Amino acid sequence: MSSGKQRQAAQARWTQTWLGGARAAGVDLGKPGERLGLPETGSGSAAGYGRRLVALFVDWALSLLVAGLLARAFDWTPSQRSMWTLVIFGIQAWILVSLIGTTIGKRLCGIRVVRLDGRPVGLGWGLARALLLIVVVPAMIWDRDYRGMHDRAANTVVVNI
Image 1 (cartoon, rainbow, N blue to C red):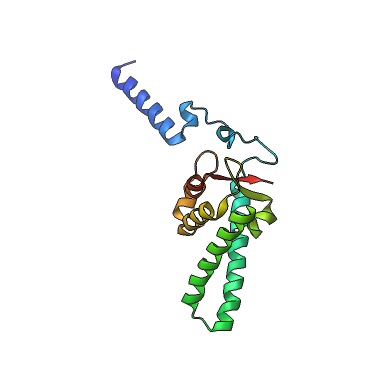
Image 2: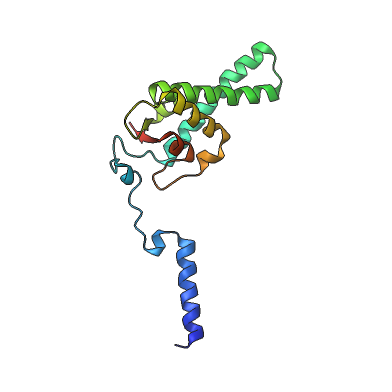
């Protein structure tokens, strides 16, 4: 093979692994939660994206409902209602996860938040997690263990019940 064709073949392989991700490059990433000592399936395993998203939508819908009721009672404008929906969502995520490890949506979906060291999440780490959650972007950046930046900052993981 000529040097030009060898170079094209090498470049094609490089881009294929780059575009295909770490697995295409032959890197073994393991199962989600494996590095954290979580089981592969069943109770205590890392919760998947689907359940987490459904729980998020349930919690957001409940926050919308509460904000709508308050908006009616206090005659809020639509922008005030939107702001209070976010505040209510943040407070419920903070208090419920801090004290019992789950929100209403998470409980309905069969998932909960736990600290990696086994202790309760607590009000301080729960607040940090909730603030990063309502900023949205940190919660959208995930690692291979299905942990968003908000979970990594609070040293937590969402697991199946």
